[in-house]
Image 1 (cartoon, rainbow, N blue to C red):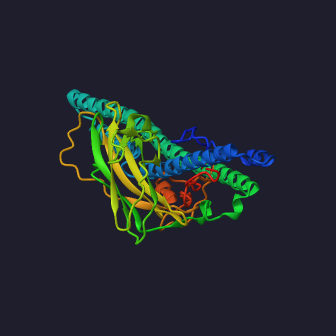
Image 2 (tube, rainbow, N blue to C red):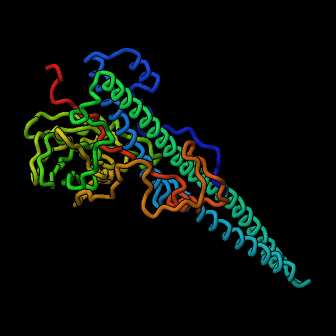
Length: 431
């Protein structure tokens, strides 16, 4: 079966996320006049919003890649259906062959009747031929129906593969667009500060490039079940640890969840509700996408802080696959940094009423470096794929599609950047 090149129209998760930061032309407009303190604050807000949109796009891209892998797996519903239909077609073909052979044998036996055969013998031979002809006709019709079913199932499988590739390509583009918007917002802010004379005081405000990876700042999720039943709420914890020998003045833990249904790999995020609570802010608050939870201020050397979380899955949620992603950032007066990777915790969603039995906690399923244009380990490119459209060159066989995906014809560009926030001022320079 040839993989179609024509792409389906698929809207990826977070595809509607629009960066709210100023674009380059807005940056020029901001530079046209010397900004006041209020305009600086507005640009800081725009930079923070652009950062949030970029982080959401990063998470969505990761989720789109997970959905792509799921779509290409041997256990994907469309793959299972295609294999079953192909087996039915093969069995039907074998049955037709056997029926044709039986008909040929009945005819040969009829022709071999001696000239002095009785009327009863002739009638029995004719009946055998008639029965064999009816069986052969039924077998031929069954084979035609099975072949049609197999072709339809094969097309559905191919369409699902192409749709997943396209969704991933769109997610990649959304990430790239969000990154451009964030960079434009950062530049507008830096240019405005330069005009105001803040450029000379680099110790007070550092931009994204001044922050560095800090592997000893860790974010670990514990207690999240590996299977969550729709219509239930589960509680778990995010532990943030400062493993360095210095105090971190402010630490921003980040966490988000994303899920897609197993049938069509469509986002079901609207059926998930994630909330957090901490010792300093005990009232439950809802997490919007991939966002900062409670700011920890300060986090001393060697210390840790726990944030309680609860995830509610609506009873209407279908069977699906989910992922929780955790990260963290910190900043001091003279330094700032971030966890080098997004920690991934995959889990599944079972339909309401399921009796899951004993369920283990979700285990870290991998990490994604928070640097631009990261490619998964073990990736080598052997098949061209258009990252913008998700189009595949025709392969001649649908069985080659999983190898194409895992061979890295599409790259995982999960760049969460470095520090995702322009440094906040401790106090107004005039205050």
